[in-house]
Image (cartoon, rainbow, N blue to C red):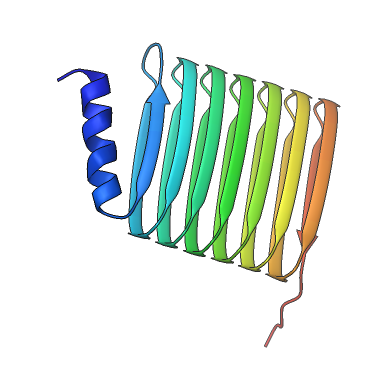
Length: 174
């Protein structure tokens, strides 16, 4: 069975199950792993290049992921649970890594990375949190951690060998 026929069959089965996903991997040894449980999830992914990796896990209801990777040995990992969370990742270059974890309701994370060896991690625990990250350059590291409800962060990092960490929210220690 050709790739297009397999993809069409997978999309038809997903549509009948109440979930929709589309992922495309071009060139050699790209890897896509998708796991969806719940209702009305959406996924759109594209990989071009060599040895790019995409791991998506969606649980709950109405989760959305959109990814684009162009280059060499880039990696994306998204895990969502709850309802109505959205993750958008665009990586251009090589050896870039993006990890997004969302647990709660209506969280959104946007991440763009251009260059070589960049890493971003966005962790959202709560409701109605929003994070936008943009890295351009090489060997940069960026982390956003949001606890609670209604947190907003926007981080732009340009250059080489830069590090940033944003922690937002409130929690109680007993």
